[in-house]
Length: 210
Image (cartoon, rainbow, N blue to C red):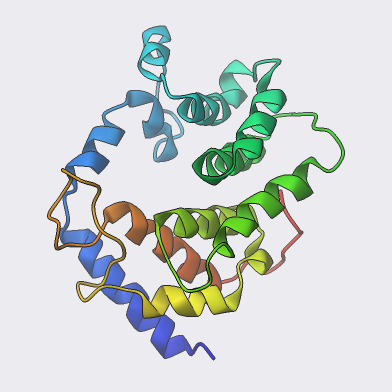
């Protein structure tokens, strides 16, 4: 059984790790001006910014991030469906794009069963191997929490998240060539923190999804 003291201590140690890290890949990611809207709703966007967004999953995210200003492409729902069918990171990014569409109050028609398939595909990532915790699983759990699907994040997985933390307070390891190999990954650590904070401070009312 998870105790408040155990979760609080784990969260505090993870925050302490993030406060002292300056992961170059994180700073490079925020160098793409379009993604700065995650932290600043008034962030401007220019036409040439789109030229720097070349990865299909990133294009999904940017479309969702600015849909209240620019609207959504007619093929957006179809693109989401393709990403979900691809599974893994494509599916988790599709879920995050969906979350941002809802947060921006943009209208998007989806076929029957779309949400169940999306949530189920992402939740299945967590259950692929019950003995491991990795960046992929942490991303799946974190984005389900953002989508108000905390109930799909098994408490057994949350216990494993706490058990698999590193001695420096974080989780995972940097990708090759990024950061110090003996330190935790900023990306994995942020995702783990999101999960633990949703467990520690659950929403007062879970409406079953956006």
